[in-house]
Amino acid sequence: MKLVLLDRDGVINEESDGYIRSEAEWLPIEGSIDAIARLCQADYRVVVVTNQSGIARGLVTLEELHAIHERMHQAVAASGGRIDAVFICPHKPDDDCNCRKPRPGMLHSVMQRLDIELAGVPLVGDSLRDVQSAMVVGATPVLVRTGHGSRTLEENRHLENIEVHDDLASFVDELLADSD
Image 1 (cartoon, rainbow, N blue to C red):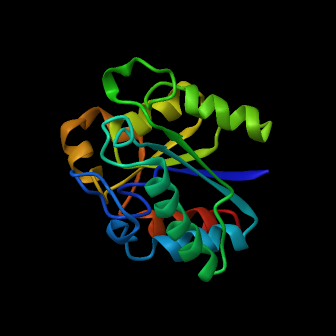
Image 2 (cartoon, rainbow, N blue to C red; image 1 turned 120 degrees about the vertical axis):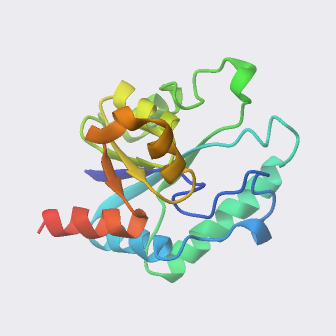
């Protein structure tokens, strides 16, 4: 099975320091929806893995989160693609859960549900915690400059060996070109 894991905020949609609280606030990054569709058309499965502490903070209800994700699914479907699953961590950073990236619990859930090892599977994110969570399970960390990605690179010069792309679309361009 060919699989790509994607963080949501800052990779698929615009980042918001005030949290994405409604489907109206969910704005896709230019090219990201078509990039997901191209992955699907190349027989990749796409899974979103996202920390959503706005739930525990009382800023977003589960119903609002489902509406946001429904808008995301519809946008991808309209472009001819699909998101196979969305895994979330609803906890705050200080809740000490195992599912919040950079801890591996959410990725272990992906492995269990899909019955797959994540060794070598790209995990595309815009933060240090995305990179760290990928490394813990043997996935391949990929950093995009969208969202918090540029700041992550500036603040973590030791990430020089990590694959970096301008955005999700440029990552997909290279991935698909390499698989030809």
